[in-house]
Length: 304
Image (tube, rainbow, N blue to C red; front, top):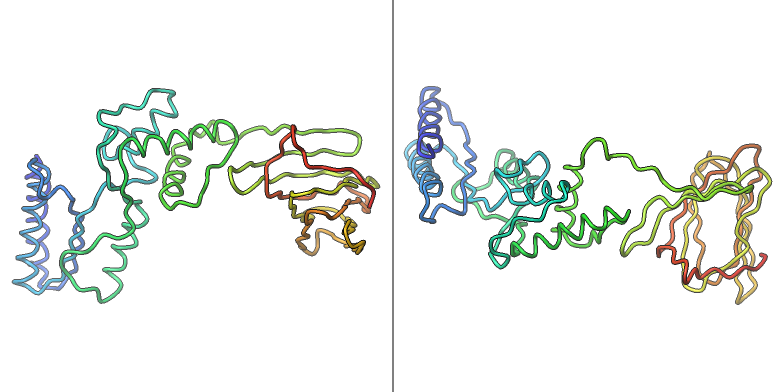
């Protein structure tokens, strides 16, 4: 079957190109398994040999990519990538099927592959066997651990570190498999007579995002932080933010409204508050460089 598909189809493509009597570039997705003792690898190597001979005899540019394991959105579990299989098992609450956790893997994200293919077709890259860049080297156990950490964080409303290209690619793939009926998540709103406060998104290393709703005439805040850094932006309504440097006594009043997007820094050691001076609810998007810890809130109340 591998010979029929990989070699037979290649022979047919070569025949059709010869019929056109034109030069038509060929990009061939081969495999790192070309020197492995298995029918799949052998069929890919045979197809490579056919293409290289055709390219030499007819001066037809041919680009051969010996790809490692390709993963990304739209891949199929239990078919063409262990990444998709592991993700499907995580979503179903199954134990990951691992035969050898120490087995080495080389993986590449589908977008990197497409970028390389497009580069061949759009520029004067030398034909022949191409080098593979931006692949990831790891073990099966490391892959499983990374995906389990992503899954655990997602269940707890957290986003994992995005400082590793591999984790970023795996996270994008993991999210692409998310069932449609779980794409929405109701958030917990903390309400009182002043308005509401809702934690939107927490991260492991980059703090959290929140939405603060303030009723007309209400002042919120009147506190400072020792090490927490915040950023405020008004997305709806009118506000006045007051800040006082507790150390130097310097004072600043900032008028904000939805018509002009202004990002306000709230540094540690600045006593601050925000007042709704409009006739409608004030909606403020807030970022803090650390997630809220009820046991160590780092919030010291004091009037500006």
